[in-house]
Every structure is written in C-alpha cells, then in structure tokens.
Image (cartoon, rainbow, N blue to C red; front, side):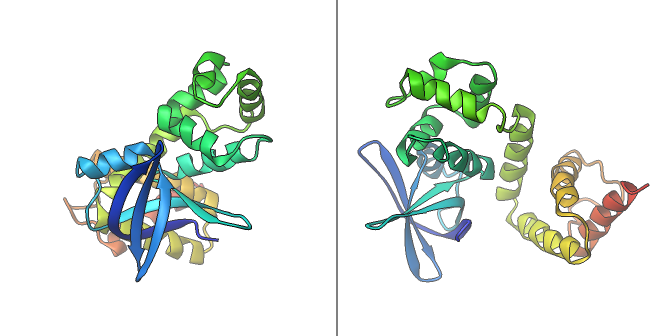
Length: 224
C-alpha cells in the first residue's frame, strides 16, 4: 500500500470541480486527485515547483485505480474514516474537505452542527446525521489537528530538518523506544526548536547527532 509520495510536480489542473496534480516519482507519473488548497498553494508558490509531498489514499476498483492526496496526514486519515461510513463515497469526502478546513469539520461534528455539514453538495439530512453519529466518538480533537498542522507546515518549509526527523524516527524505533512516545515527542520537540527553547543546541546546529541526543534525553526523562 502506498501511504505517501514525494516527487517532482509536473502539472496541476481542475476538471468538473475536481482538482488534480501530476507527480513524477522516480520516472513514473502519478495522477492524484487532491484538494483545491493544494493548487492554490502551488499558484502562490507555497509549495515548491520542484518537489511536493502528499499523504495518499489508494482506492482500487475493477475498472480504475485512483489516488487521493493530502498535504496533512490528519486530512488523509479523516478521509479514510469518512469512507468507512456506509453510503459515503470518495467525492463526498473530498467535497467536505474542499469546502471546510479539518478544524471546522471537527468542531461541527463535536458540536452537532448539522447545518455546516449539510451545506456540502450531496450531503442530505440523513447522511449528515450519520456522519456526526459515526465520527463523533472517533474524531481527533482540534488541539491535535492544530499541533499536527504546525508540525507538518514547519517541516515542509525545512526540508533538511524534515529529513533529519525521518532518520531520528527510524533510529529511535530501532533502539526500541515505543512508537507512541516517539509520535508524541516530535510536536513538542518541533515547538521547542521553533521557540529556541533547546539550550543545548547552538543556533542552526540541527544535525542528526545533536537532535537525536536531545530526543533521547526527552524520552529518557519520561521514564523517571
């Protein structure tokens, strides 16, 4: 299963209220349906013209293979959750995420805001009630979304640091640190980096060795 993709942006276009990009990944062209916000960011040069990273959901049918791509993992995870609801297809999920931010959707679900959910084309009253009923107990909270949004945006704008964090993740797992603890650590570590709270690091000295040592110190302190 393909979970994410990093490659060169070849093209982006809109067709019948759907938004697509074409990514060159190691010589293969992946056509991916995405959100309007991705195309907006491309036009505003918020996403590099040379490289783009998306979290993917691959839907395979008898007559088609379709990729859906999102800049945030939480968007992708929500899309998967909504596809698990009976009677809701991929385009309903994309329409909902195109019209509202994930934070708005989560707040609507938590607050039983049927008007907001039902304002999306193709979502009637019964479907609105089903979405709120089935997702309210599963949905991630607003604070988690905002923290992950900041984390993803910060790393996307710092490619070298993003690569270091990926290596640190693998190294910590190989050292048998629990995955859950590693996942919970990264937003805190990024927040401290952004706010210059890591006293042991000189300015801009974000090497793999230095950050790994800081990460291990964080995790080891939690044991006591």
